[in-house]
Amino acid sequence: MGTREYNRFVDPDKMEAMIPDLGPKNMINVDFQEIKQLARQGYWAKSHSLRGKVYQRLIEEIPCRTVTPDASVYSDIVGKIVGKRSTSSLPLPEFVENSLAPTYCLNPQGEEAVQKILLCIANQFPDISYCPTLPAIVALLLHYSIDEAECFEKTCHILACNDPNKRFIDQSFLAFETSCMTFGDLATKYCQAAHRLLVEASEDVFQVYSDWLRWLFGDLPLNYFARVFDVFLVEGYKVLYRVALSILKFFYKSRVGKTVESENVKQDIRKFVRDIHQTVSPEKLMDKAFSIRLFSRKEIYLLQMANEAVLKQKGITVKHKSVSPSKRMFVHLAVDPGNFKSEIVSVKEMRDIWSWLPERFALCQPLLIFSTTQHGYSLTRLYYHCDGHEPTLLLLKTTEKEVCGAYLSTDWKDRNKFGGKLSFFGTGECFVFRLKPRVQRYVWVVIKHPEPVKDSTTVLQATASSSSSQVEDLQNPDHPSSRLSPFLAARHFHLPSKTESMFMAGNNDCIIIGGGGGQALYIDEDLNRGHTGHCDTFNNEPLCSENFHISALEVWGFWDADIQD
Image: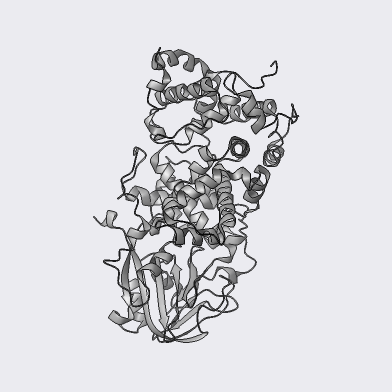
């Protein structure tokens, strides 16, 4: 083959069956926006040679550290590292955590080359402590490299990216766990039906979500993964979230009305992804991914930083190579039946609520900080016990046995900033819900169609480098940058009207949750009466009888045993 078609590492028969080489062979010079559209459309998806040329160009354009290992370094060290031994006798680098390299139509020589390249990368990047996605990347890039040395150089170029506004590969357990938590948060917001299915089918839905990168880097067939990687090189990490959410939506569609076994749900999803060609084409998968109106890159970054800060507080650092079960609190352990007691909800109902929470708080245990049973029916006492707690969970039961509530992202003491005037505060992480007579959650309406303000990249640029002092400031709740730019702050978005950002308000006379056109919840100063109706902020139905009497009300905080100890 005279035009750098399949190299000696690829099984041509398998490759032709997987991705027929039928597409265009060349592409004229185009700007970034055109490249972005062509990548999304799969312009070079059916041309092996053109995909190789595009990968070469895109990887060369990635800014990276001045001293980045290249092909010559590989030639110098591979013999010393591997020697005359068979690669089968050499262990894979510890940072891949026993992740098997997908074959991706490679022949035995190609499979051996992947292992050699990984060993050489481990030698040149001693700071990589956890990177289970790397085998799949090396296996794919080997298709589009002249030899092992070129594949090594391309991979190193991606690993050494130093553009603070681009993120490609997680290289530590802290970064990996942060991305898993962030995906869990996004799935809770963008795949609500699938999330409900998984909550019912598994003891710990967040452990299901911890496999999300494995779905992409290993389980997806080659022709699907290559399509994802095409866009990944152009747009960065955000496309991975998009595609994984798309997979979750299609998995749910395939399981509606069917029984999902609790102990098998993780394997069920992975099997669905491995066999995805039976139900979803690569084009359909990508179309679904880009139809999701996902948060802006800045919002996702702020969420990642919030999740990372919590993991650091729990003792996980960039040096961790693995995690003990106690480091990642399972949801079913966070709500401990032995210690949990509520006058309003059962353990199971609290676990269901816990599955809706942002992951960084779902790691905590519920802590009862106010109840009408213990502290009486007084709004003043509620404030006394709740001020200083952030976030909080409000639950109420009516005299008609209806149960509803709200997750409130912001400390109630922020009401004091308005001098006694009833004014709204909080963030878009707030949501309202009902449990009885039927379960339903209502999130901020903007989440479904987020439109970020044009100049919202300022904070991201100021806090882009994960090693910078600005990020440390962002993770410090007392620093101004943290207060000015929380995740899902209303000021980050174009809103048709102010009524779409009325999250929570309170004074000495009442508390209100959700506003605009009505109130999701209104509770009087005696914690005795209230009313509920549709509001613009959450676009909710009434959470119970429109005018109700309160039988019991509780406010729960979040206790982190790891930090307290």
